[in-house]
Length: 388
Image 1 (cartoon, rainbow, N blue to C red):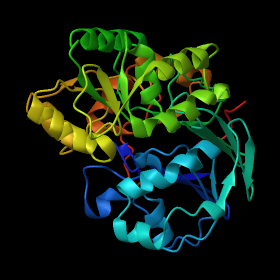
Image 2: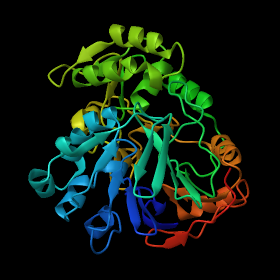
Image 3: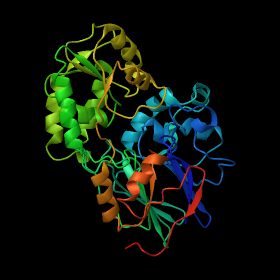
């Protein structure tokens, strides 16, 4: 079995890899790299696409699905596998992050989507693809690809210690491609959530918290210390996520449902509220937060950023100028979580995705089998024989 590293290796963004065995070839994710331009915005998928048998999408965040219209524009005509929740969110992600020309000619192909549920086992040729809940978003999954000789597990984005979502255990494998977004950050999610709660409490006259519509938004709602407001356009999606009880930890759905019911709706026509205000997206690149960040800045309204900030993004520029604070709300594994994932997978050889090169070296002392020199554009062989 061979892996082509098409994006997200030695870098953050455009996450994508191809798995090949014999005459079978599949793609896992097809993301874009926010902050890049030209060819670097898209996966390093050179040449033909007619040898790709199937595409499997882990979830609907832009760094995992944002290049779908681009892939279709290049002639990809095969099946597209994803969960119902990913399907329901994908069109909005493409509208925000796809090239407008590509999206106009190749909008989200709802009639071509083949649905599965987390936990299902899928087939493409001689490849068997296991899936499990990621702990990252409702409907998000990891993939484990087996050709009968070896198994490669690709975590996509996962959160093993989420306060909201369930993550299923990644099985033993010969090669683990894990979510290294935070490098060797040792601070657990509970401590970061407390830090965010304390920051919000220090700003009782209101503040803005940009957030992705799915995933981190529920983590923030669970962490907020008191009343809050949401952009009114988020309510329907948040309610749907909270209703997906199979993806949530026991008891969390009831708590979040009550929190959402008490949240105030806010629209662009309203004055800035004297409450914490959640608005999507998390970087200020699209959605209501693209309008709210400059408005908050002009008004001196406090801003707390809680996730990845690509260089040159509105959130990054505001933070660099000292006009927005930043506290990470972990929606990827911290150090203890990744070590646990690796150990439960049988301590296999490992690659870290979604991580800049210098942070991979910090992880090596904790995960000795980590191959720190692998980069986007390379092809590697999956070892054989160690999986159980």
